[in-house]
Image 1 (cartoon, rainbow, N blue to C red):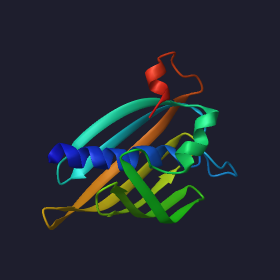
Image 2: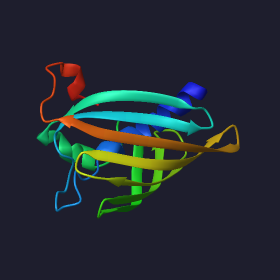
Image 3: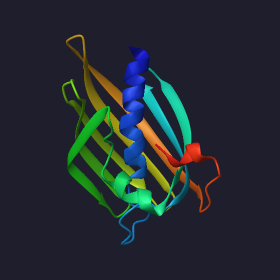
Length: 152
């Protein structure tokens, strides 16, 4: 169960971290390039995962749509991203699961990002508050030739 919670949290945070504007200017998406992302669950079950990924110009729109894939669908009715600050509030759910409340606050620059998230998940009829953090930094313009780094 600890592993499934960690995987859910890591997924919920990984894509939003890269879906933010790359600068406080008029830019509307991440700056393409090579990124390193650290996803941490701070409580109740501490975990840490570091990933490196390539974001190509054609991938930016997908990241800007938020974390949705064949496992999770997320919606953020509150999504304020401006002036180097971010505020998110919404929910994510699996195909057969109930929505999980997600809120987040953070800051970003052109090459860095940090958001702290609070997730209210239900396990066995109990609400389990989870505190998580994602930090990301752009490593450079060029991505390695490894094709596994180009997909999420």
